Image (cartoon, rainbow, N blue to C red; front, side, top):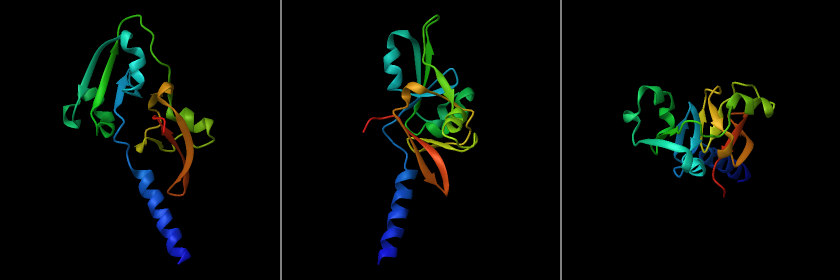
Length: 145
């Protein structure tokens, strides 16, 4: 009976880990990923916002981010000479956590296999190291619980 309980807990935790957070809408500026909510802080600096509701509507330069477009994808354009957030690569986050640079990173359940992808640090609320398929991986939360 104890073994069945352990198996159930492992399967349940794996299912929860793999679920994407449907409350997050990703945004792209300057080829780096943030969240739509994060860019609210920069409203006065934003010149234009394009919202693509479906993956099929993405322009060619955003196709590489189609896996993030479940809830649509925003493209941000800042006004000239306006400040914008700092970004860092996911491989840098892996190195800071003493993980291999090419280890996948999860952001709100979305798996980022290309760790050269840059993200905006302002969207990161929490970073946890969790086990995924027997390997330690970074999981980033962008929403306060």
